Length: 544
Image 1 (cartoon, one colour):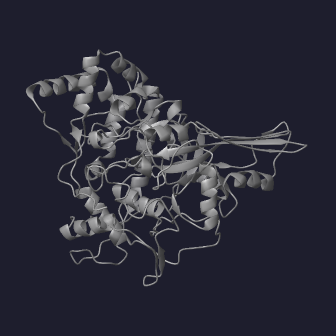
Image 2 (tube, helix red, strand yellow):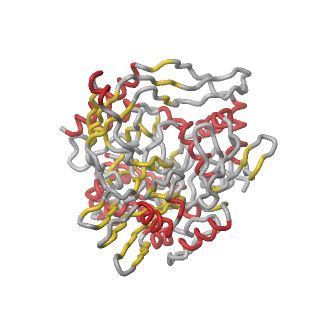
Image 3 (spheres, one colour):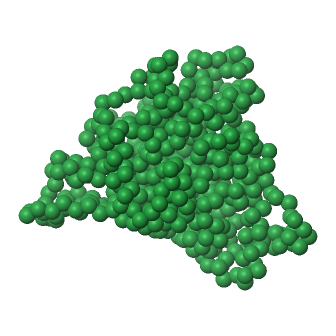
């Protein structure tokens, strides 16, 4: 019943938004010159400060100096190893015994971990991206202080050296205590990681429709073990990109990555700011919409991964057996071979609960079970629900405030489910970026493009949320090209495909157990089949 309500609710939300859509302009066909320009930009090493254009260029905080330095395995646009893992610090719990913390005291305990949790308006996020490079001397020192608490080796690129070091970092807690005569305040935090995904075939994923995803979700409704759901964004679209599937289109994914990974301001995305230098603002735009579109065109033109041919007749027989067993133990329920135009993707692109050990506090978008448009009378007397989450690049984070106080104690506990079952959402005058404007520049065809959709609606809507474990929900990663994309899982904790299967939990537990109970020859056959899913051979190789 809840799944049906969820599906009906999303359909209604999409309809509400679609009724008010104006100004749709069809996009032109991709030009070869745009693809060539996009490759140059993807491989370009950006540098700080550009006085000609009046912007600050690279940084001030960045994970790497170019896209290809993280996307390189199997060729330009591939996955990245653990050494380039993105890191975030997440505050799981703050507890003050015999004390009601005021706002200043709360700011002080959080700032003692890292001042970057505190925003310019003094609100506090419970998640902070711990960017690898750049920043002031004070920022660099604070990062070293945080990482020195871990019994792990970090690479010069900023991430752990390998999957084993990933596990050390992920399982090491951070605990801060502040004690005096009146109270004892304890803060518990952890480091969370995201491994770089391959972009091969991203153009086909961009073409997967809401209908394709909705069909797969409906097919899983009757399954006794699997319960995937689309990642529904606040504007009604389904997400397809990112480990949480919290980005709807390839263009938006590139737009966000430029700002958050390389520190390049775009028209929509602000670069990360250095909390040790408050008040600084980039005077300009580092990367134009025209350049974002060119990078999108290059990535969309990258070929999809391929199947490697067998080495012998015996090997071919083993691969066929492995593919059949892959389906019979249940892997294919989530790792679907074809999804709309994405043939051979081996994914449903849906969110699945992967168990507590896969938790990450940048949670998935909450599931919307039902959407109810408010009447004119209701719209006149109600106001939107107060913000309870802060939207960040890797997913939504929760705000920490001093409202959770009972019995003369303070307690913040990061929620594992939505904290409120109902939200009033303002969908009026909403601007929804489907594509990107050319910002007045001409394309390679000599014509200026307008790639924006405006959504205007005079109503509020009431969203009824389904209480899923959104910290544990992850998009099913496509398996095409999996041979050339180690390490595995969202944080790169698994060095091999066998390890990756073994650490599956949550909805995948029963499938994992059936695999592990197979005879050795059958398990080897499945691994042999997976090893045929290789990165495409006709992609450019990085010149790093």
